[in-house]
Image 1 (cartoon, rainbow, N blue to C red):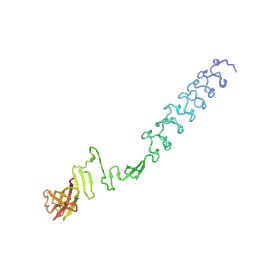
Image 2: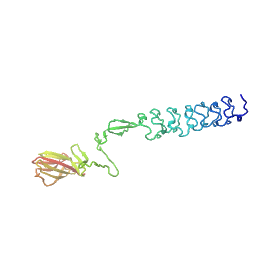
Image 3: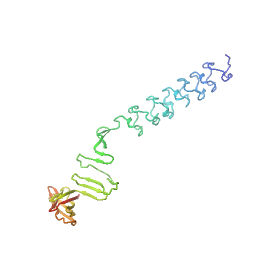
Length: 349
């Protein structure tokens, strides 16, 4: 083997692998590119003696390079053993969602806020992978966690559930709602039914403006925009024509004296009985019987104001008013013919 006096006497390629022993060359005395990757023992040289790209993944053993001595981009992700890089060594945003494989990070090794939600692929976190109380209240934006990720009971439960029932709150128990049996909406009709006998089924309270607005958008002439039905066949309605109609009573085929209508004598002190009478032969008239009374003395006064007869005589039917058993009664006195009687009743306040 020829003697070599110093490093400057060597031409490129004269020294082959194995001709120089370990530690034969001081750090920093070999120019970039003069010694190939395979001539270096593990851990003998600092990174500044190696040109960019000359050391590929796998050429340096585990722990051969001290932490923070590798510049950004010089070591690929496969060169680092699992768990050897902690959160402090990675700059914010340096790791994207596609750069970390599934299960690459052990649970608990990431500090709060280190991984943003948009760095995770859709579906990457399944239900059960986050423990109870793992997320502080208020740190999850609306919509970020679907219903399937919530444990049963963390929101609320619904009692008495059924189709189309409207939900109300219950005072007993935490986070419990009740689906009301008698309060339903099917997308077209709202149905409210009361079985408790309370005075108010539907109560509206407001400060100003219209408390109730009803609009008919169908443009069907004659529709009843608002209708209230009473158990005794009475009806109050408002038509799309703009008229108000009160059907208090309808009596058909009457041929003898009959109580056409009665109201408690304590309900008011005066009433107006708007009527129309039609005889089977076609004779008819309309009028109003005005009645005033004193419930204490059981006294009553009345007056019948009517139209002229139409289509024949109507003198075979007349109206009187009396108080009987604490009721003010409108009595139709019939002396002949067969009559239909229609009434609309108004009481003074």
